Image 1: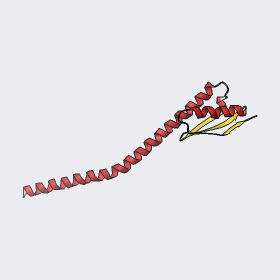
Image 2 (image 1 turned 30 degrees about the horizontal axis):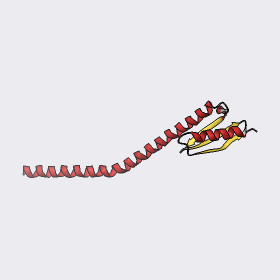
Image 3 (image 1 turned 90 degrees about the vertical axis):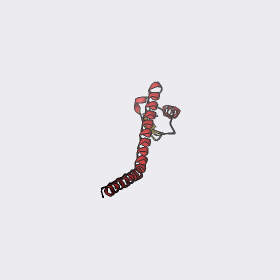
Length: 116
């Protein structure tokens, strides 16, 4: 009698352990997908921040640009410039400089106005 109870207990524990491992595997996949999506978003944010910093620093390094008057925003590799510059030539230079930065997919300079 004691042996049959022991066998039943072992069988029950084995079945429970197997069902838990299968259950955790079923829940692991959506969790992994969510984690991968979060990592991708974080990498994109870091990349966009890096691009924005590089564009701003290239503006500061160029004496022909009034870098403090130009706002730079980056979203998924697309750089948006806004603010006021002295001339159309300065606006064009800012757009060209932004396009030179590694990782930039496109530059939108519509928000960058010249007083000229």
